[in-house]
Image 1 (tube, rainbow, N blue to C red):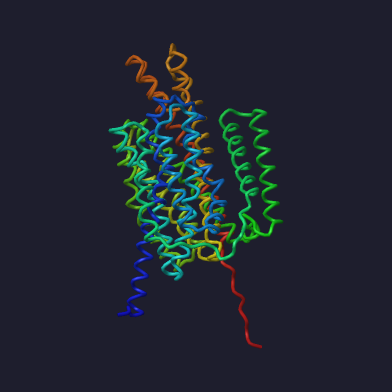
Image 2 (image 1 turned 45 degrees about the vertical axis):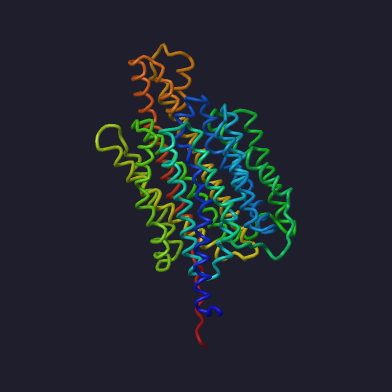
Length: 515
């Protein structure tokens, strides 16, 4: 007996939502890997003894490699099939996670994180493209996009919790090993529940454009980070200039070839390009906030990784409601106004974080309130951007457009950690050095003068009085650096509020009167 049309439609609808749940698994793991190391920083510092620059590279090389290849992998998925690419990437992500878990030096861990970025770049655009092709109804797609954005933000939130739980019982390598069961599960169930989809047009992937994109991002990143960290020097300045030049060549190529990796002309449209810029700013500040808050909970307040991770998830109660509320408000007031309101809310949150003090009103309470406001505002912005850009994209280019959105996400987050992380580190070094006790061994003095995690590691091997002086100086220096970094972030978000209202404003409809 055949199934009735309404029953068949209902069954198909359920299958779409079940498939969305499956897609959330790799999305959660990849986004979780951005933040899972935050609470592992002290353990890595004690075991591998990275410099401040190496520590930043351990955090953000994953994001930069990811960002450099997302456009390419989005186009590859459009060509060979998004589900197929998702499964290939799952194998690579599991193997590179194993490599990272057993890294024996800071350099090896940086390399492993880079390889993880290559594998991760196949997963994220595939998930977004499959959502775009599975949900044709705009209302359902909006709900699916809200879930997609919430899971991505949730992965960043859940990462520290899982990391903290593992670090209480196992070595820091366990935060990578947890990826492997998730990838194995995806490989088992994806062929049965996820539909295959690909572009009907067999567009050739431009490998040269992909090479140019990566060759532009990495030297620019290195140059900016090194100049911010160490001041003017010829080598980083030359690499920065070379990266910018390669970036210009990349743009010129995209404007001249028939099937560009990145549609520059679409980006020049005010609302599309403005949406990508707004998304970049949102993730730029969000990841910097996460980095600051996790270091404060562990190294300043002295919580264990697990306890610190539990406190870090407290703001998610507010954040979880942000995406659906933003979607409802956008239907009443329009996306641009709600997104500008989200930026303003986050700026207020950073203002609250500048009021954190070691003495006086509970620093933990102030930190949690500020973090909740920052995250709620940013998640609201990111949800509306994703829904808008994916909604107007042609289905045949869903993978490439998904790669573009994720590129802005990952570049924003990686640059946020890199640039604001450099500001945090530079101010910390300037503030802590004069107050370190005299007579410290060179290694201990260097570690304590680089990062607060290094100070904590060095203090473990010092006499009680010297250890207390080192920790007092490092905590006060970190508070100073934290306040300055949060103030800079608040100013950036206030500027983003104005940019959003200008670039994303709706076109006024012409009024025609009868003659």
